[in-house]
Image 1: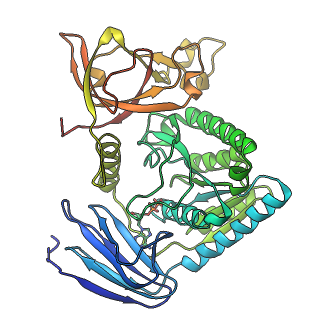
Image 2: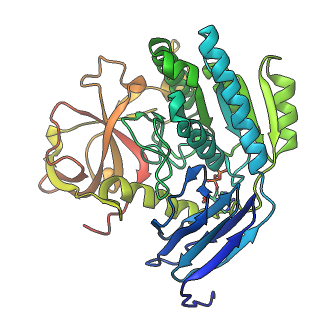
Image 3: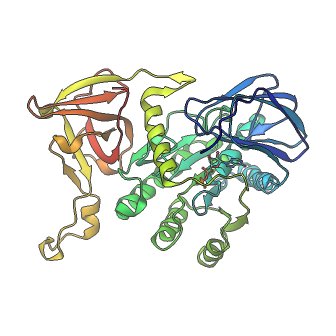
Length: 428
Ligand code: ADP
């Protein structure tokens, strides 16, 4: 029902501490932004004057200026407006406090700040992480190397939905990408919701924390830069228990709570005294996303994994593999009645059990993760994954699977882990 208007170049004058907000609302629509005068940044990344930045469908952007600036927007778009009310001063103060802790950790040769960002859905958690990471990466003279940890399997920002991951941030993200990408650490969880298999989720969290702590111990620069941990918006009941498990496993020092006083009070009550819990306002610009948008976001993320983005087009391969030539497992067996449970087995053992999957129609459209393990004698569940393929066709008569893959040939040794997450490949 939105009226499409073709808008030619629109100029905006921003006073200091203001931001211009806009969205790209329609498919096939692009909006081009240019900084004409002054200084401005997008979620912590500085804009280069005179350079054109192109945004595509789904982008929800705020161009903020500390000093004042003029901007030009080209392309048709929905709402765009200037806001004078932003929480950027609070966020900058957070960055300054974290920076003090980094300096202290450098001097005393101790671990730098481990920060966790929490809050309900759609309050700008990912955006705050991005701002804090970009601010620390912008101080390149200091050589900060914070690690970004994304524990929300629903978005799969670091690789694809159904996974959790971590990546070292060496430079600010490009304006048009969300996080800078360098060899990430990725764990296969297999669901987009933590509640489906809490035991597995917690197991992976503990393992990931262990691995990251080890890396920090080995590298002083990473160690003093610390971590920024993004979490998912499920903050009640069991969701809250997950948050406290994360805090414990990663040994967090700082928890930034966005927008929810109740959650803030609970954490102040339950966290040890040395954990600093800070309540922060959310930005009025954060856009609420409905389930449809979330689903589209997931799909777009997977499509980008295989096909790349407009600024980095990828050409995936399609290959066939015989049922008998592929080793597929899933983690967690279906629940069995207590009476049938072997005496020496716990429910939690079942949830992290590796179960062979017989190839067939049940695999259609599913994402399969390629484990770094090659035999089931290894600790497959707690091992990271190298990449993903998608099952685009199952031919039962010929006993063949068709896979969409970044690699030309399936690797024969690989153990594939089947995800609940599915992807319909329209390009095929
Ligand atoms: P959460 O991680 O809490 O779910 P996000 O950080 O992903 O929330 O933010 C939701 C959406 O709002 C994102 O698309 C983001 O780009 C957008 N957004 C965040 N801050 C602003 C802002 N100040 N103005 C406009 N859009 C914003």
